[in-house]
Amino acid sequence: MMMTLGMFIFELASMPYQELQRRTSWRHAQTERFGARPALQYVGPGEETITVSGVLYGGVIGSYGAIEQIREMADAGDAYTMVSGTGEVLGEWAILSLDEKRSNFFVDGMHRKSDFTIELKRAEDAATQTATETTTAGVA
Image (cartoon, rainbow, N blue to C red; front, side):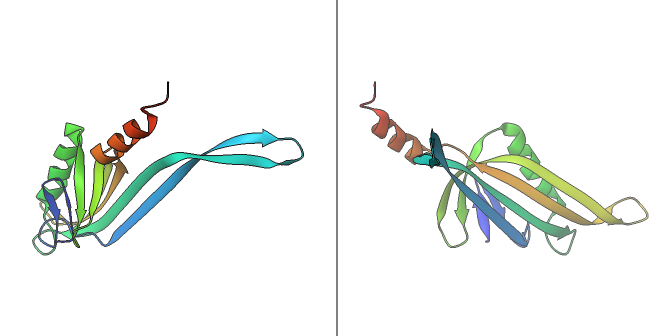
C-alpha cells in the first residue's frame, strides 16, 4: 500500500503513482509603512495541495476501474482522510480534478496506457476546526 484516500487504496494493483507533489502555504497580512518595507503579520495556515500522477498499463500495472472510482469519489463532493503508506495521517482532502490521457490503442479502440494526474486540496478537518474555535472563542 502506497497511500489511502478514504477507502480507496493506492497500490500496484489499483492506481500506483510515480510522483507526489505537495505544496503548503501560509498567510501573512501586510501593512504598508512609509519609508520602510511593509510589515507582515502571520494570520494562519494557507492552502495546501497535493498532486499525484502516474501511468496505468491495463492488465499489467494498475486498473482502469480505479480511475472511475476516483471520479465517483470526486462526484460525491466529500473530503476524505488521507493516510500515507507509513501510517502518517495527512488530514482531510477533497478531490479537485482528475486528468486522464489515454494512448497506445488496440484495433478495437481499447487503450493500453493511461496517464493520470489527481489534484487534491486540504479541507478543514475536525482537529483544525476545533483549534480555530478554541483560539477565537474569546474574540467578540
